Length: 268
Image (cartoon, one colour):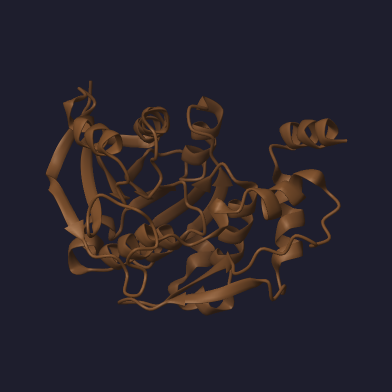
């Protein structure tokens, strides 16, 4: 039965499961509707508690909602990234631009960028994440920002040329001006795949902004070494931004704050 569910997911690329998840989550009190209060308030959804006895018939949907809950939680770096994107400095990089968020999770950073961006695509490998992001994009509280006409959410598996092509197609067939990611890299291999995907969807001269709660010496070295690649050029020295108020110490990190990296894609 598990194998059949996985095969069905492969055939329809998860769209049927995403629709089922959206129906399950919408109106369920176990999924909180939250407001990020920044320069412009945006609404997002996240799972507020683990409910092992949730009745989900589809094995893929059950796995997404109950076993793999990391993507449907709002992590500290997402709040920090959202606040920066709504600052004068951050908004200057996204105003009127097309933006792709990698590893969106609940989509907070991408939604914050969408307030002044021209077009925003939220993306994640998690089908539950895609469902939550789509619900947030169309949530009535976000209508004042016009999200319905300029936001989309889709599944993006890093390293997949097919998925990268779908992301570009969601941007009208044009490569993106900006890519953002909040706390999306934990290991060198994921960094390699994420950078490859960012490079595939980003226009030459476009910038990848990456906020990270650096957890190890290895990850710190890997992030700092990105600018040594011929494809990427450091835009500014990494900035240390503050943890969101009340969330200090929630994750083990090397630094007191969140590091923000900015890399420009170089035409090679």
